[in-house]
Image (cartoon, rainbow, N blue to C red; front, side):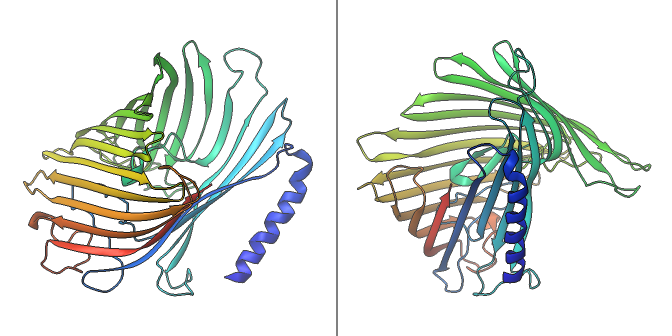
Amino acid sequence: MQHKFKLLAAAAAVAGAFAAPATFAQGIEFHGYVRTQVGTTSEGGNLQCFSGAWPIRAKYRLGNECDSYGEAAVMVPFGKADGAWGKYNLMLALQEKNSQDYESISDENFDIASRQNYVQIGGFFPDGAFEEAKLWVGKRYYNRHDIHINDYFYWNNSGPGGGIEDIKAGPMKLSFAYHQNGGNAHPEADVVGKRYSMRFHDIAVNPGGTFEGELVFLKGSTAGTADTGNGYQVFLQHTQGGFLGGFNKLALVYGKKLGAGFEWLPTYAGGNEASGDSLRLHDQIYFNFPGTGFSGMATASYGYADFGSGKNTWASFGIRPQYNFTDNFSLAVELGHDQGKTDGGDKPKLTKLTVAPQFSLSGGFWARPVVRAFATYANWNAANGDAGTNGVFGSKTSGMTYGLQVETWW
């Protein structure tokens, strides 16, 4: 493994040397994200996380994450700051099971994944509607929106594709994109999901408030005779700045046929025949009261997904207040509740509470890096079974976990 990383480092250095004459003065950028933790449960054993049974689709994350995950992103600029320019973006994800000091890909305890690999260019259109427009091709994060405290992506149109973005159109900007899943040179029988999207964004609708949306048409495609489906999704969101010292985001997501579902859509929409529809409402508030030491986030969601045999519903609400005793020491408390109802009548429920003292380099909810100790208590009903707990707690319907975590981004 060390040999592989040495080769990667050498290749990056050579690539940087050849690219240097064409780069901007500010040079290469390096960004990333890391979280890792260790702990145990009230029953003993390894750290265990709590999550709900279908149709509950997310879990409140403070003191409730078990995977060690990182993202390392490099951006290499080309061209001139006052002319045509280009940017190459590469992001790799690293994930491990924290089973021992040496973990390898071969024993499936460590994994490396490609998350972004695309080129963006701009600066060559004349003044006017296309003055700020950018072209891009490759695999990228595209118009992703999540609720931070439960790491739930309620809208995500990422993946391989291409498009043009930031076209001025009166009071708004327009962006158009094409995405597909399934790879290139696929066999005749494969069904590939294709996505055609139009975004309208940066629309000022009230003092401190902006509106945005995206319409995605979904279509299956095959070189053979397999049946394919179609569908669409609509995403609408209003963001209010200056709300309780932070912001409020209210989003609506509606999907039909291939666009019906609860999460990671439209990214993972397939191309086979589909039926039904779904509707979701998500609201999240980031609050910050300067001079008091209090900040945090609260959220509430409701949605249904009907795939042709009846509605599956999911309701969720949670809050994570944080109090900073000093710029470097704080206490975060997170309470989250989820409940669902399947088309078969099951009604799973899960409630989780975490208390986490934290050390960080500065004050505030978003301060990173942060090192936490945490204690998490959860209880659930019989309909939730041992979903997400791997049977660690047996027939019990409550349990606790304890541990340490570090999280940062840059």
